[in-house]
Structures are given as C-alpha cells and as structure tokens.
Amino acid sequence: MAERRGTITTDADEKVVSINRCAKVVKGGRRFSFSALVVYGDRNGRVGYGFGKAKEIAEAIRKASEAARKQSLYVPRHGTTIPHETVGTYGGARVLLKPASPGTGIIAGAGMRIVLSLAGVKDVLAKSIRSRNPINVVKATFDALGRLRTREHIMQMRGLE
Image (cartoon, rainbow, N blue to C red; front, side):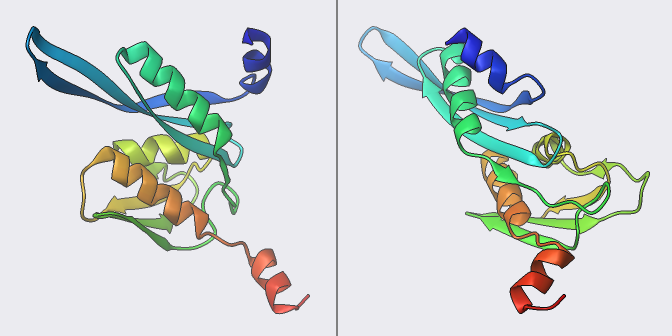
C-alpha cells in the first residue's frame, strides 16, 4: 500500500485547510472526535478536496487525503491565470475569481489560496463574499473552478474553428 501511495504523490502536494474538534458529553466525561478538510493538487491543473472524520486527528487527515485523491478536477488555465471571471457558490458561501496580470500573485483568503496554488494558478484576484466557513469556501471555490471554460472549448462546443 505504501508503494502505491508513493507513486500517486510523486509530484503532488496535500495541505490541511481546517481541522474541527467536536465534543460529545458522556457519563465519564467528554469524548472528542475530529474532522479534517484536505486539498490535494499537482500544481499543473489537477486539484481535489476531501473531508474525513475520525476519533483521532491523524486518522481524520488520512481519510480526507484519500478522499481528495479519488475526487479531482481539471482546472483550465490561460498562462499563469484563469481564462475568465467566474462566481462559485456552495451553501452560504459565494466566491468571486478574476484573472490577473502576470506578477500579481494569488490575492485570496486562506482556503481559496491553498486551492488555487495547488491547482497551479499563479495570478488571480479572489474574494469570498458571504460565508467565512472554510469548508464551504473551499467547496464554492471548486464550484467556480468547475465553471471555467477555455476559448478553444467554447469554440468547439459551438462548432467553430
């Protein structure tokens, strides 16, 4: 199993976005459980996220990273930025992504910054509009990235050359 995992992550990174602790009060005291949100990406257009829950932090992170590898998305890019402006929503979160000129960097909040950097986007302007919940912000960012289309893709859909 360790060999297989090593071959998958040779040129990819994983980052933990958030860890939540939940307490259940029982007769003997408090029982804690943890949930982790992990983003996985190869910095070349492939990115995914996963959510894991367990009684221990390390196990929650492991489950989340496995889920992130299974579910990934291809992000079309135009040079070092995104092809066009887009808005993504999830729950109460709304995210705005705008292309930026080379050298701008990633102007975004913590959750969005991790997703965009692991996707390989180097120049982008981003704003989280409503929710501050990191899980919903990451999911809204993935929604926005999933809506991106390149010029070639749109021309092909319309049947033009």
